[in-house]
Image (cartoon, rainbow, N blue to C red):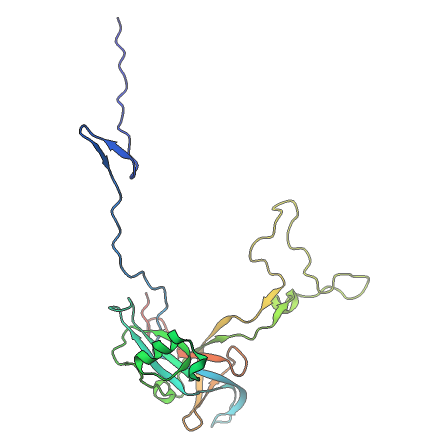
Length: 264
């Protein structure tokens, strides 16, 4: 009688939560718990401490050599006070939290008031963080003057909220060209075709179409400080910045990779 050799069977790989049978009893294998630690903070480093201000408007400034420069005037109300200093030991990253624009107590919630009273700071409307490499020279309730942080000729990055223009069409929102206005044309300001009908049979995401315009955060980089007036508590910055008069602005030193911030 012929003998038939059976192929060798490899052992099955067990699921992490499966029951593995042994000669004595069933043994349950579970994954090991992960160690708890601070999650990585995904924030960009600032080139230095900055300040918050209020946009007052635009004007024309004549430099001493006669050059005409369009500038934005930024004023500073009471504020720019250090409300909290964060370190890697306590929060997982180094940052300085500033407060700006004093308000009445009833304008803030009880958690906000408790956060400010913990540092002995007056009631402030706006709180923002500046993530830095080192926070050794800062302490709570420390006031930052604009003339101490910046000087004339410095380059700064200005962030703010753009003017909201509501729902707009493609011509105003994306600078499309209009259609002919004569010879029986019925397509004047319409967007026209937005894609094929059969293939792919849908509109791709990100298509430039009518929609909400403005009201978003924008940053204008490397603007030059033209004039600092400590008596009037204003700063003149060359060029235009986001927002309308009265909006909040965030002014920080301009980032230059390899010079004031690391390449990585």
